[in-house]
Image 1 (tube, one colour):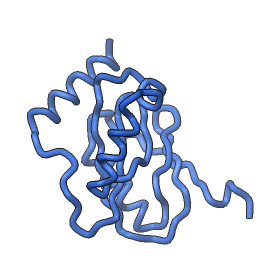
Image 2 (image 1 turned 135 degrees about the vertical axis):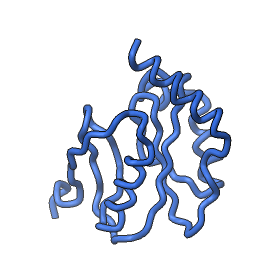
Image 3 (image 1 turned 60 degrees about the vertical axis):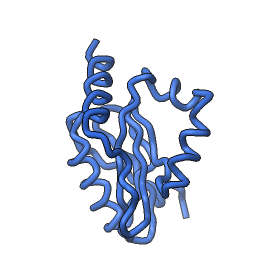
Image 4 (image 1 turned 30 degrees about the vertical axis):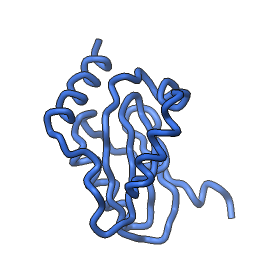
Length: 131
């Protein structure tokens, strides 16, 4: 079977800060048998074929990183991803300074719990993108 049969690109435009809409979209795709694996350009999302299942998605913003490479090459990346994995959150992809995780647990530990910190990270990330 060709690799292209295992991957599909879907075009769906979201506002960069609209985590709720993105998370719901990714969760629906998982129920249809597609798991997010990367983001390409502005509105292209690449998914790989999986058995349909319920996945929970979480999106976090890390304003200290300016782009994908600065996150992926970060010295702290491995430690950060290991900490997330201990809580059941697996790395899905990164786009600019937005990082997407998924969790297969029925009732996962919330990814972020402080609304003020979340909002501050979103604002700082948006400022970086816009300036």
